[in-house]
Image (cartoon, rainbow, N blue to C red; front, side, top):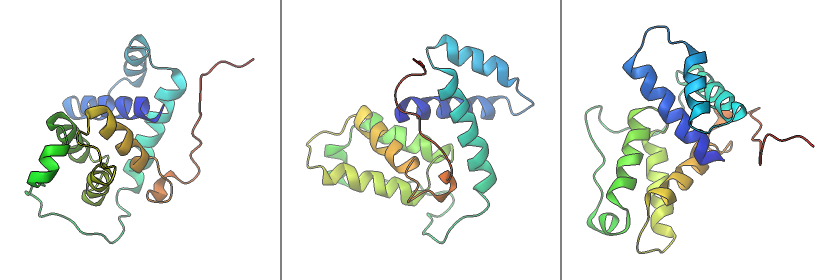
Length: 153
């Protein structure tokens, strides 16, 4: 489920960048529902974005790359991490969903698995675990992660 929420957040942040004016959130929600996402997933994504934007000014001490620099994979990392998976990480970094230290954490996790190939789906899962980990992301304090479907019996 976390990967689906990440997909929604990426979609919304890209929409916000393309049309920075007052966007009709209802239209965006309807579009996402038509793509098969649930209302609770969409609401969680909106909540995460607004909470993340509010907390973005309260950065912790951590290393940062130079503003115009791009993290280049080492030859060994290139052999293991699929280009589309690395591109996805760069997209998350560009959208502000992860910081440089988070990107390093995902790359380190990918290499520590010991697999000879890390796919886009693998990276999505690892990125979701970093983004939605309340221990490494204190801005998630108080968020409830609903597991399963929206069906109530």
